[in-house]
Length: 164
Image (cartoon, rainbow, N blue to C red; front, top):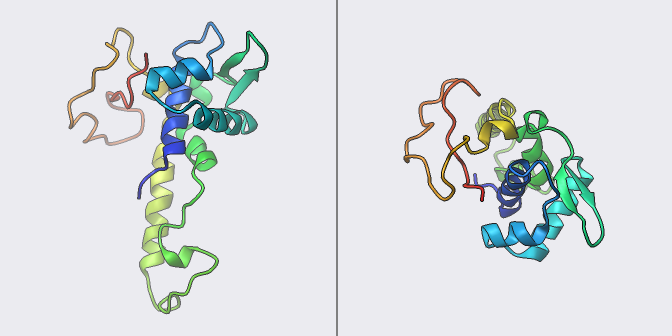
């Protein structure tokens, strides 16, 4: 399974805005900070504002801010709102032609794994993944950071994406 660029960029956008709580952030500055396309970020911003994650202000001095505190933005919910396809195997789709559908247990296993994946993400909020105070922008944690996490929110958190 691989998350779409939309979800990746949506999380980065939310992280950036969360790290600048005292002001409105613009699509242009976020695009420049992450080297992303402004039109693509505009689509993501529109979707996040429609879903209630961002509040936007139009006009010359406009921009965006979080619509709620970072601790109230659940990662699993954001993923559900930004991912368009959770059909991990053909038989999950409405046009399945799989001849094993009635005789195969794989779909049940994959569905359970997907549910656990989303349940795990539901244990984390935007506040949990923000860079720690004093962290240098552009640094990454060691490759194995967070690899042995037992329960959501209980162990040190790795920095997913540096935020300028």
